[in-house]
Amino acid sequence: MYPTNMADHHHILARRCWIFDLDGTLTLPVHDFAAIRSALGMTESDADILQFLASLPAAEAAARHARLIEIEYELAARTAAAPGAGRLLGQLLRRNARVGILTRNTREIALHTLGQIGLDGYFTADTILGRDEAAPKPHPAGIEKLLAGWGSAPDETVMVGDYLFDLQVGRAAGTATIHVDRSGAFRWPELADLTVATLDELAEALAHAVPAP
Image 1 (cartoon, rainbow, N blue to C red):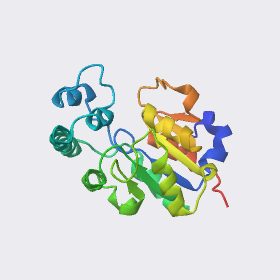
Image 2: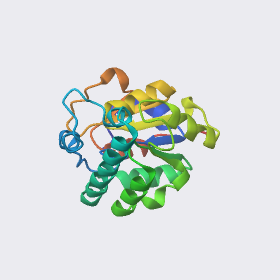
Image 3: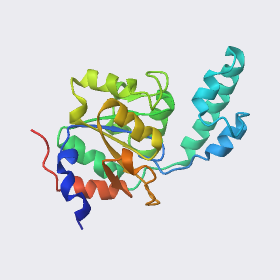
């Protein structure tokens, strides 16, 4: 059934450049961030993992980065593709849309994860930007880098994600934003142009949208 609440969003769905968060958006969520912070020796006041690591002396930061990468590989082994992810990406590629990934993970782990969940065929390595290729979200540098490579503009682009940073980076870069939230809570309505519970719901809406010329 076509989601009628999206009837006014064809101008967003018709855009030709789509940038996705990876963990919890294209994958099922498996990250326990409280446990990750604890494993890295963070306190409750240390909210942002990457900022915390960047604040440490070089030797200590390197050791904890290595532990973070171990954790991220462990999580990649436990996840699966989000329902509707393959369907949505297939639709986008059939209409000749550009697709990319902007993640706070590393590119190497993102590539590994995509292989694990069977979505590696939808992306090329140069369209996957991790924390080493651009300043991490919510800084807009990653989106700007992808759009420069595509020769595209923010008003042709959609940022899709499940968390605050994904919506903030879209706003900072001037793209449209789509919030995917299986809980239906949609905690940041002021940052989302469109909200969906699943990628299947988004794919269903996209099937009824006319692509941009």
